[in-house]
Length: 138
Image (cartoon, rainbow, N blue to C red; front, side, top):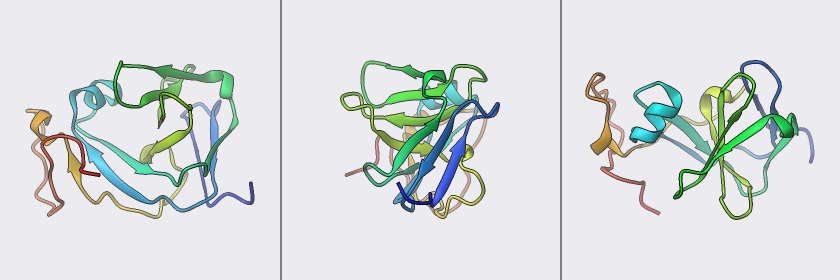
């Protein structure tokens, strides 16, 4: 891997990632699972180019939650930071939580998914982003 375009990590520093290509896109997720996992009304994540993200430190500290469908939800087992989501079959990083990125991720969320499950205690802002009741199309 060449010099990473982006780096990311958890709150305590035990887990570090390198991403050697710009993020392809980003979106907010309002599903109940993301709300409970993050403690927020929406989770912002960026899609990585396949094969571009690598755990460079702390692989043994990464916890993986398999909710039975969708992607594996990956976090630091030491501090609990939400880090990324991975393919259930290959373990490859698919999306990185924007809050884990060091500095500017280079993309801005372009849509909101699972708005049918939005938290009742925080209205979705009128930001002009496309909204989808379920998963983003495609």
